[in-house]
Image (cartoon, rainbow, N blue to C red; front, top):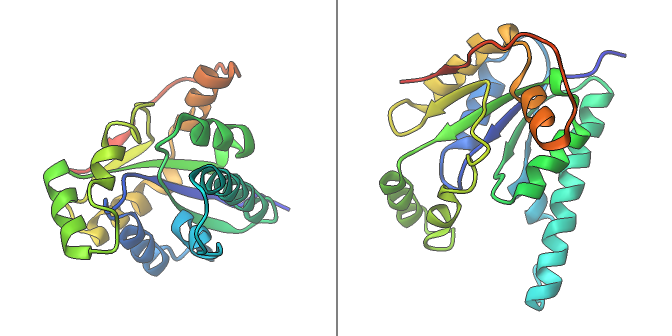
Length: 198
């Protein structure tokens, strides 16, 4: 059974990942895609009060389970759009360890800090300043196959860019390059550039 494909959206809270994912599910017509969002996994957790230590442990286990759920879905041939916040280095490393790099289109979802702050205030359902805390962390690894900016392009425009790029992913992929850097897994494939929306 052929493995599925992964469109992996990484960006801060309120950067527009979920909106892009919904658009992708609407326009990707060469398979059956599932939207797997880390927020959805967090929402399944019991919401009773926990000590900070217990909460941190529960959140780490949740994210580890999320990563393994992605791998399991893809292993049996499902195509997925992943919506994640790689704000801690271990999250990226865990994904690099679990997911086959050739299956992953790694997408950087960017937005200006001013716009992220405005969106947080409008939404009112996220801790104030969350995006600012994540802003310098989520893209620190500095390597994507394709990037989009939701401050200058609509979710549909970003989704169309990703759809156009999906069948012609670079060789090696960003995940292949990042595995070489973080896990010491070498490759000898030629590097090609990535795309970015304006």
